[in-house]
Image 1 (cartoon, rainbow, N blue to C red):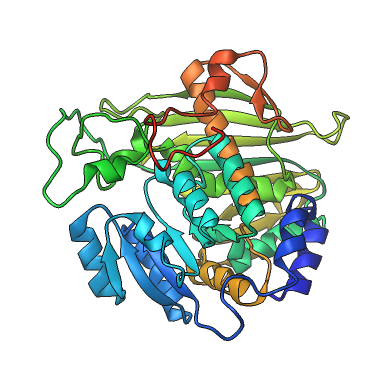
Image 2 (cartoon, rainbow, N blue to C red; image 1 turned 180 degrees about the vertical axis):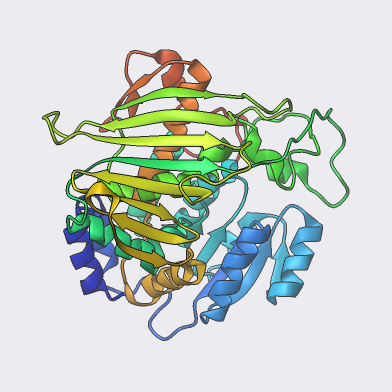
Length: 434
C-alpha cells in the first residue's frame, strides 16, 4: 500500500489523529538507509519469532549483519540458519555498529523498551515484538525515543498488515454493521502447567546477567528461560500481553478508539493452574472509552481469557466479535471473518491467516521509501496499555480509573505504582524518566 493510499485509509478509519505526528516526519523522505542501499539489520533475541522476522527481512532483501543472544547455543544456531555475518551476546555491539540501519527486538518483554530506546538513541530503526513494553510507562518512553530521534518503530502485531483483517476493519468503518459500540477479544486455549521449580545455577553457555539486564537480580530458575519467563511479573506480561494483545489490538482498531481507556474493571485470577505462574489464567475485564461522555459516544472493549480451555469459542480459539447497531462481525486472525446482518443473516465472509511477511515488508518499505508503518509504536502502546491495565486490575483486585492524557491511575497510589517497574540500581540499560 503506497503512502497516499495509507493516509486515505487512516482518515477513513478514524485512526489518523494519533498517527499524525509520526506521519509528519516519516512520510516525506527516505529514512535510515539511503535510496537504493541494502538495508542492514541486526537480530536481538534468537527465539523462534525473532528468527522468523529476521528470515522474512532477509527474504525481502535486507542483509543480516548480526544475531545477538545471551544464550550462546541459540545464538550459534541462529547465525548458521539465518546466514548472519556475526554473532554476539551483548546488544551494545550491534548498536555501536554505524552500518546497521535497523534492529529486530525479539527478547523477553522486560528488554523490549530498554533495547528499543537504546536503539533509537543509536540511530537505528526498530521492529519490536509485542507487547511493545513490559509496562505502561515504558511504552510512553518508547514513543518519546522514536520521536526525538526520528526513528521508525514497528510493533509486531502483524494483523495490522494482514489483508483480510484490514478489509474487515474497513467494512466496520463503512458502516456495514451500523455503529460499532462494543467489541470483544478472547484468548481461549490450553496452556501447560509449568510446575513448582526451585532456584538453580544457570546452564553453561547462558549469560544470565545479560539476560536479566535492568531487571532486579533474582536467583535463576529453569522456568525463566527459554519460554516461561512470560509468566513472571519481573519479565513478562502474562497471556494478556502475549497472545491477548493481538486480539485486544484488533478489538480497539475495530472500535475506532485510538487512545487509552478511562476505566478498566473486572476480574483476573488463577482458577486452574497450581504452579509458579504469577499471572491470571482467567480474565473477564472491560475497558471503557468515554469519548465526550455523551450517549452513543462511549465504547466498550471486553477481554476474556481462559488459558485452560480445550475448545474454541464462536468458531475461533483466539478471536474478536464486533457488535453494531445493525449487525455483528466475528473474526479470527488465523481463520477469517463472518459478517452478519439483522436476525443473524450471513452477509459476507472471508478466509485468511495473519501475514508476518507483509508486516516485515511494510517495515522495510517504511525505511526504504518513507511509507507509513502499519503498527507504529503509538498504536502498539495504546493496545498494550489495555493488557497492562487489565493486569493491574487483577493484582490490586479492584477497578482502576485512568487519565488517558496524563497516563496516570486516579486516586489509587498502589495501582498507579504498577504502571512502572523496579530496575537494578545503576544498570546501563535502565531507561531515563521512569
